[in-house]
Structures are given as structure tokens and as C-alpha cells.
Amino acid sequence: MHGLTLGFAAAWVDSEYVEPQDIENYGTAPWGLIENQTSAFATYELQEGPLQGFGFGATLVDVGDRRQGDLFLKGYTRADLHLSYQGLPDWDITLQLRNVTDERYVERLRDRYQDNFFGAPRAFLLRTEYQF
Image (cartoon, rainbow, N blue to C red; front, side, top):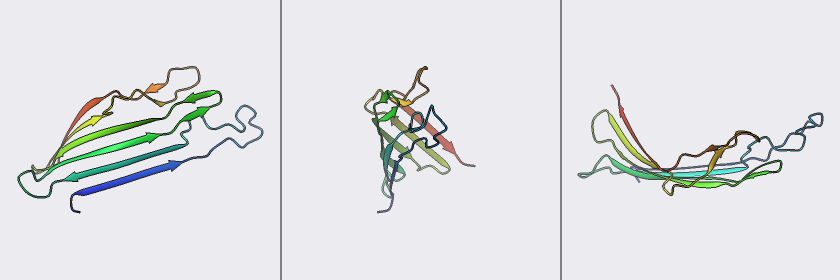
């Protein structure tokens, strides 16, 4: 189908320190390791008619649970939506609604004794691009 773009990505990681001389880390997973993560993307741009050049789509990101020693960090799922317009010569305009459900989640572990990095709350992002 013309105008339709689909994407999917997945990663599964099973990792641990295997050097027996590394007494502190031997047998543990690297700090903040995400064991599984998947994402899917779909977008459609209208190819003809009065709305030709308008597009819409969605992205879904699912990040699995993370463990580090005695720490446990719950996974999260985030959904994003976007509208775009490419009907003007040399212009590309996109409006994105990121984190549609306003999910509160930790995106990345900093370390055991510091604050973690929280994911962005619901936000609108406008991007305009001009090619010359």
C-alpha cells in the first residue's frame, strides 16, 4: 500500500560478568541492563485528494523490567502519536504527542546512590524542516 510505513524492532539480552577475578561483579548483570525491549511504528501519508501530504501514525515502545543486584526497576510501555504535513514544496512539518497516557517511568538508572532519570511526561513536540 503506497504511503504506509511499518517498522518493528526487538532486542533480548542475557548478559553477566564472567571474569572470576572480578570479585565485586562476577555473576551479576551490567548495571541497568534491559533484558528485553520492543518497539513498533506505523505511519500513513495520504497519497491523493485534497488532503494529499497529510500523514498520521503511532509508535509503541515496551521496555522490560530491569534488575541490578537487590534493586528492581519496573518496565514501562509508552505510546506516541504524530501528525505530519509534506504538501508544501521543501517543507516537512510534524506534530508529535509523546507519552500519550502520561506514563510515569524511569527511563535510565543512574547508579545505586543517585537519582534515576525519569522519562518525559506527556508533551507536544513541533518540528518544522525546510530543505534548500
